[in-house]
Length: 580
Picture 1 (cartoon, rainbow, N blue to C red):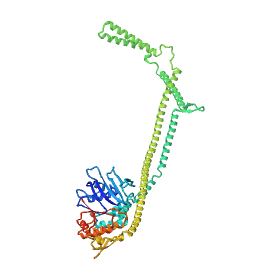
Picture 2: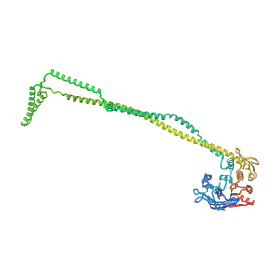
Picture 3: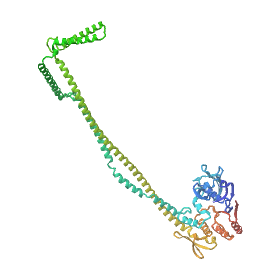
Picture 4: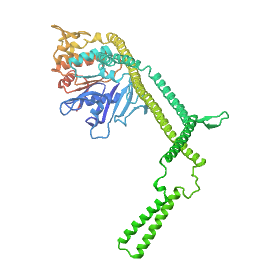
């Protein structure tokens, strides 16, 4: 395949820029920042699309290097479109490839110009698999050549031999995988699992202890309920009869105490009566038992009152009335006194009846019974309080034990949860390590196959273009994985990395051109972006001889070197020229 036209409608710095190409050599000349690298990326974009992956390094305004993507680097500023068109010929067919690179509106259409039919792409981002066989990475590693240093040469050759791709480093991939394997080492998790297992052994009995605690708490509650019911029944002195009825139990001790109290009261009353009779006999009658003495005493009181009244300044009527009422009062008092002593009775003494005595006894019994009930209630209340306190203390103790056990169970559950998480993480790390080991093994196996393929394809021809491109100063090129890249010269063998930068660039170009010639049979545009700088026209002519030997269908030389066109003109080589 070769390209016949590029139309950069909106791509990088270009707007509606059209470049015509032809088979053979195309020279696109321009100075710094003229857009040569933009054209290179547009060619790649037309064939394979534009990626948003950060895979290029460029300097910002401050001179610092930063990673960016081709998409961002060449997206036009201030324009809403990001698109272009390319015309290509392959096997006698002409294709119009139209692309919109804008994210969110990305579109690729390929039209067969002769038939007018659209070509259906297997992957809308790339022509690989539909029109092209070669993938993007292989194309860039093989047919897109930039200016390279000795370091770039060594890395490219090593990668190409070991991985088949100049951008994929086996050593870096293995180093990364081994670093990840060390980072994912499960040994710390295994030690943590052992530690957790040992800690969990101390919690083996927590479930059984909780069950025993709950059982003891239920048993204590049942015992309390039974004992409380018993105390309630005892305090009421209730009994169940044979027929199922309930009655109060007789208190024989109380009956005995009441009978004893009655007998003692009767004895005490009899003793008091006998004492009164004996005292009366011993003392005889008193002076106030004589009627004459009482009358004389009353007259004396009246006389005294009358004397006092006459001494006071009262009227005569008032004095007489006062004396009269005083006399009446004395007489009544005397009569009432004799009545109380029984002078006016028939000689019999009034004594309490049997009913009165029984009533007094009942009152005493009731008071005694109430007192005993109060004392008994107090004793029972104290006993109930002591029983309730004992139950409460025991219950609090069991509750405290339950709380402690629940806390231990929570701690155990946390440890188990952590153990599960650690175990799961350990399994993930072990799976990751298995995947890493498999990747390392796969890389080693594939690397061996790539090395065998390289040994049978381009490695024997690495020196093919070294002599003409180095001006005859170097010949045989040798690569060894341990010693690196060496080249034979007039003065012996030299490590390429120790050569002057200009010579190292020539050897790099020689190797890249040799690989482009030997590694594939598919013909695609060979693009060299300022890949070589000549110091004379003779060097440029030697380079053109190499291109002629490669027999490439199309070569696009993006260059600012003035010797290149002179050499082309001197050798009468037909070429297409474009000035930027």
